[in-house]
Image 1 (cartoon, helix red, strand yellow):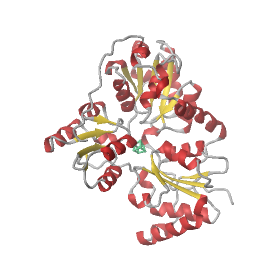
Image 2 (spheres, protein in one colour):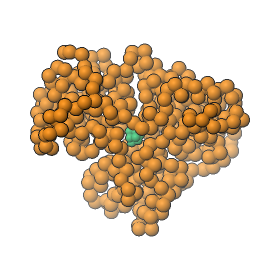
Image 3 (cartoon, helix red, strand yellow):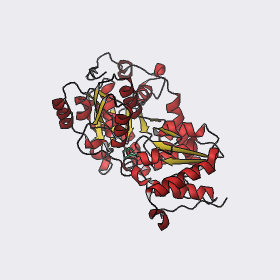
Length: 396
Ligand code: SF4
């Protein structure tokens, strides 16, 4: 097999094929590649691509599932950081392809690793005790590697509370403060879910010197929140929650913790993509759900649970336009290239970076809820400054 080509230039002929022809050829290539191919699709991918997936899931689970197969080629219909994680966790004989290298993640790109390294130095020099970075898996491999070097760990939106507890426990990260990277909302929502208050956190803006904060503010803060966000989950507003309730007082509002704090506070519950899927699946026939997460997933849930009323929380679509860059023409192009022995758009994380990034991922995987300290232990006090909003069960 020749060396992979790294190009963003989809050959023009793929753009000329109609949808039926694209689907037929992709199905043929899948049959031809057989067990050598493992095709992954993230939950936020659209159905035209999802129909070909061997696994559909969140980014970490998909990477683990693909690594457990003996497929030689992992084609990841997601975004760049997901393909990097798949490569980091894959076996030595496996290669990872991202069908369109332009499919990045705007939030991951908000945390440039050099900026994060400089910010960590600044925050540490401000005093106030040991700082441990906790980096969302929605980040570059370089940011994950840096996290490992600084004694931190990765987190997902499913396990972030346990990872924060680990970081703050004396037996775990022994942190006096957490630097949450790159999603400010996930960081703040998690801190509040653990019993802290909004004043325990400060927003670190990498565009400003010292994050736009004084040394005193940095030293005092328990949570330093990197000023990043996901544009998909920024779509939702507290007015959307109020409108959903006005339209149907019995509706259960559940949102992703990447949504702004005011939205999470107004909702009945917050949970990761997998937790939202599980909550709707556990709902009773006739239950009504207004969901604050990506549109393709919500539409899929509505079709899967036709005996429940499942709607998007907002009237505006919440679409990840980066993920939409993986379309049928790019998928067919990448499969054709694999079948002809000339792979395109292979994502390879350099060995030294992969080794360090794997440490941050493995620390997260190894954290068990039982090892986590309570918020009171972590704070060294029995006083909890603010309780989370209680979760109502009316939709279930
Ligand atoms: S939904 Fe948001 S966090 Fe996820 S890939 Fe798209 S931009 Fe990144």
